[in-house]
Image 1 (tube, rainbow, N blue to C red):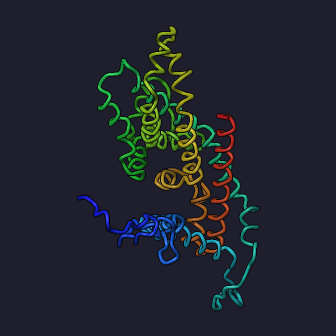
Image 2 (cartoon, rainbow, N blue to C red):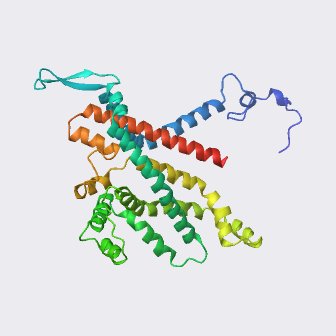
Image 3 (cartoon, rainbow, N blue to C red):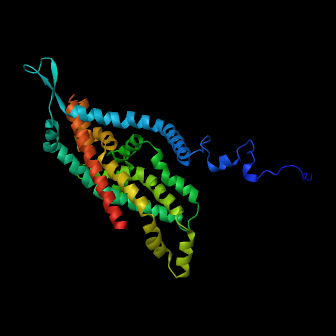
Length: 337
């Protein structure tokens, strides 16, 4: 279309802006129209993400609060009180504030101190043996010459699938004199050992725990080995490293975080030793009702109805477990650095 020569020419700057969002006032940010702020949109996106995270974490938070926080708080509250009876002990019970008296009783109780020392000796022997076996089995499964890996992986893990009480019952019958095939084998070679005696009972409990938990720890270490790049092994083989040197200088250092994790779990489990000695207790006089700290707390609560003292034992044991686990974790982290 040609423009008529007689039609007036309107400058571009004076032409009316088209109705839409692309006018000069829109581009220049006219006061009548506001551009959406990036900060506002970013804050909305952050708020939406926070709400989504809160919804996803809510079930865990509720369970954590109901199963851990509230029971721990209730135990701490109970440990600060004691029950008193008037007269010769036949009066009505009365709960009074005791402060730190229950904790003083715990820390000065010889039975509690002996139990703590017993489980510490138990852990110093049993935990390195168990983790050493778990590491050895994981390295064997990860080696190239290993065959039937799936079968042996399931076979090693199978003892963990058996409940701890049932495993303790099975081993109790293997330890019991008169019906134990282990005693028959020992007599045939001239070694008549009593697995339920005072001198051997701690090692017998350690054998049950090691048999039950080695496969679990092995699986954690083996999973960590699977994440190691295979190129490292190939480069080491090209440099002439043997299988033993590859395992010791490459695999073991790289699975150190897994070993630290299993070590922390083992320390926690050692201080919570309860099921195995409770199952073996009716079969031997070497295990008393206060053999471990957890058994002492159980006996005080359900045998003597002293719930306040039992709560104090539980709190002290929890603090000791936290201190040992945290100390082991710091030492392991410092060594890795």
